[in-house]
Image (tube, rainbow, N blue to C red; front, side):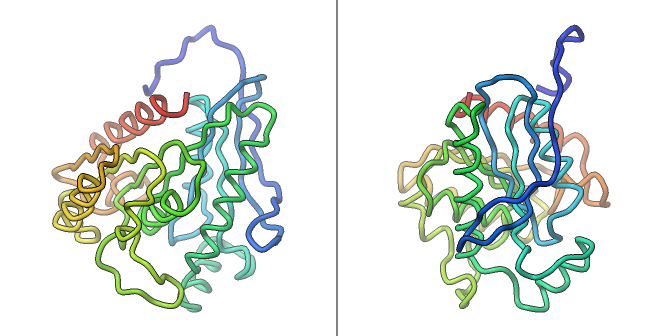
Length: 252
């Protein structure tokens, strides 16, 4: 839980950018933060959102590490060049987006990086917000080895028409979902809408999956984003604690 550490506890973290062998054998940049002790520690793969491999996700990773996780954020946009996160995200939008196959391969490589780290306990979760919520569900339904998944208002899990870059709707892969899933959603959101969240929940029930969905009144899309008008402090903090509890249950 937030602010639950002891004031006499010692230790810190190691955090920074490194390169990693990712999908297709490509070397990509990734942000890693981890506790500086001997472990063993659970891990979490953070799939970054459409605005890119940005400062919010670096801070998000460090927050997980403060709670005892090895956290890794692979740069899914590496193949589109470098610049500021806004510049690179614009290039990705101009190209029509990043492919599902590329995201899945990079996330699988990040999973392998964590589990091979000497301080890993072998259990890894995956989390994403907005478009990355869809990606988190997609990856956990495509790659074995994840022990928990968190979908934060993932748009496109339900209802997005197939395309060359995104050939499937993750809801259609529900029978293959390999991990217990928590979902956080704002009732004022239209992408996903409350009706789409209902559809996703129904599919999870039908397939006997372990899940916990939480819906927040007074919140729309992106209510964790403290740097944007969408931020809702009370709902965000409650949601963070629910994610922390979920991952602690399945990853510790």
